[in-house]
Image 1 (cartoon, rainbow, N blue to C red):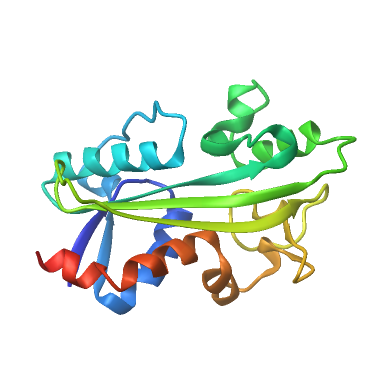
Image 2 (cartoon, helix red, strand yellow):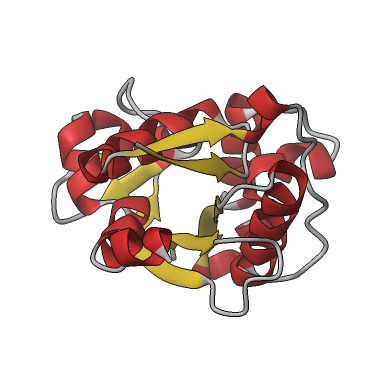
Length: 201
């Protein structure tokens, strides 16, 4: 089985990505298990931060690495919280963690009729820290932000992210439905055809 270091300590991402990559015989090892600290994420885009994190994990481990940078981009908030999705409430002094992030996001949309939003995901894989040809894939999932939590599944903003065509929030979907439709699932599937050859080089 091939090993890739996951440049993240997010348990939800580890579970989702592991399930998506398992059919290829790829084992994801979270960087924390190897004692690798999180990389700085100083850039304004998902792509730049994902590449930085992947190179950092590869350099520290000596192994190929994969990074996922993702978040929710809300139209009425000019794309916020975007790359700051995981720390949105904390940056505003409004708490910390998923529950506080969701409450703060809903508070920012009070009185706003445009609730359109996108879940975005950029996945980058590098064979080594200086890899000049990283694999890059993007996924995007369109939806709307609702005011009340719905569903008990998923993580992050899932209980408030409504998929209008389904009439459900992401937290109301089964794991299988989410994997088939999600921004992360879309991005991973773009990598699947090329990944075996890429890993063998």
